[in-house]
Length: 215
Image (tube, rainbow, N blue to C red):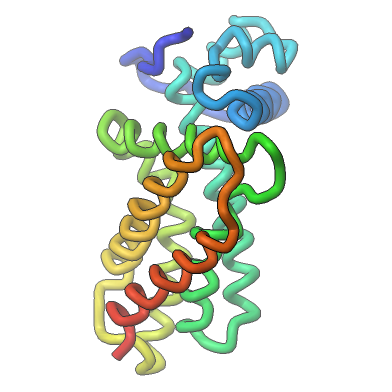
C-alpha cells in the first residue's frame, strides 16, 4: 500500500488541470466507498481514473493531498447543502438544529452498501490529519465552520443565543459533534449505520448544543 505521508515539498496548485483533478478525486471517493482505506492506493486511483502516475503527481504531492482534496470537496458540498437547509429554517436556532442533525444523519451516507466503509475511512483520516496536517484540514473544514458561525452570529444579533465569539463557538460545536460521530462511524465500519440509533443520537447531541448556545 502507498504511504499515507506526502512529501515535504510545497503542494502543487490544485486544479491546474480541473478535469484530471476531478477524475482523481472521484476515483478516490469510489475506492473509499468500495473498500475503505485499504483500497485507496495511488495505483488503484490511477487504474480507476485511467490516468498515468505523472498526471497524478502534477495534481498532488502524494496520497495525503488527495485525501485532503476529498475532504475539501465533501465538506464544500455539505456546507452548500446545509446553507440551503438554513435558508428554509424559521430562525437561526432552527438552522443550527438542522445543521447538527445533518452532520449526525444526513451527510453520513445512508445511501449505499459501501458508505459505512467510506465514512469510517474518512473519520480515521480526519483524526490522523488533525495531527499531521492541521492547517490543511482546517482549510477543508472552513466552509462548514463559517456557515455555523454565520448562524450563531445571526442568533446573537436577534437575542436568541448567548453572546459569544461566533467563530470559536462554531469550532466548538463542530468539534463536539464530529468527535462523537467518529466513535459511531468506527463502530459501524464495514456495515450500514443504524438509522434509529443515529436519530436518537442526533437528538441527544442537539440538546447538548442547544443548552450551550441558547440564552
